[in-house]
Structure formats: structure tokens, C-alpha cells
Length: 224
Image (cartoon, rainbow, N blue to C red; front, top):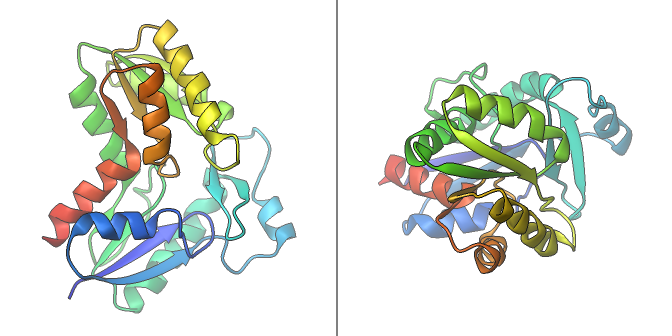
């Protein structure tokens, strides 16, 4: 039986995500989870949010709340968690965040969504206007530059997935992307789920790529 180590930038267990990913595999696997924020106090978590100084990410906490942390502050902490997962027996590590984790190394394969996702969207979206949904408004400017550098015509907006208003936020973002002429929608955050994709489709019925679904298919190929 394969052992998959799931590393999140938030706290574990990721009950909103890991069971979904495992279910999509259709085969038994052993699951390990570690989170960058697992062993931190509320004050320590807050210290990782350095305002708008550099690229940042948002994530789910164990109690259903959310936190924001700066990318540069998260990278060395992610390396520690990946090391722990490998030491515990993971023969595949999956990082549950769409940022680029190329600086994180391991002696086993590491699924790095920050490299995987943009390349897939670059291939799928070539010649189309791609609507991109990020979880945080503060990520929009960086994302526009990122995808334009890949040669894509993009319209980028945000919809926060970690509160009670998430589905309504997705609908609003979908209407915005529809008005921007999006011919495909890329829901970039693994915290965005199938119910949110359904809400987006009701507002704008174009091809919609969901990050968590794409990630599940990639994992499935690696463990098949």
C-alpha cells in the first residue's frame, strides 16, 4: 500500500480536502498529514502575516477559520513538514497549496502545484480568454503578471473560499469573469470545492477547471 504525505500551509487534519482527494483515487492508501501551522499559537500564526509585503497565501485552520501567511515565511516551514512526512514513511508528498514550492526538496517525489497548475492551464487555455479565480484579492496583481508571462490572455478576480459566504463570492466572481469575456475558468485554490464549481457554472457555463479535482487526477496517476 502506498503512503501519501499531505503537507498543508494551514493546520491538519484538512477534513475539507484530504478525504476528497483520497476518495478520488479509488484505491486504498495510507495517509499522513502535516501542517505548517499545526504547532503554532494564535500569536505565532499572526506573525506570519506580514501585510502586503510580498506574495502571500490564505489557508484553512482546524477550527474552520482561516489565516494568511507570507510565502517567504512559509517556505522553510514547509521544508520541515515535508522532511517529517518522509521520515514517517511517505513515499509521495503532495503539497496542498498552489504556490511554487520548487525550493522544497525530498528524496521522494513531491507534487508541486505551483509548477504543475500553471503549465496545465497554459496548455489548456492557449488561444482563449481565461478567467482566473484566486482566493485573495491581494493575489490578483501577481497572478495577472504570472499568467501573462505564460502568453495567456487572462481576466483575474478573487473569491474567498473559507467562510459562510463562499458560494455567493464564487457567483459574484463568475459574473465578473463572464462580463470580462472569459471562455474558460480556472479555480486556482484547493479550498474551492465542487459545490463552488457548480455555483460558478450556474453563472457562466464554460469549461471550468477546479484545482482540487486536477490535483486528485495527478495523484491518481502517480499511485496507480
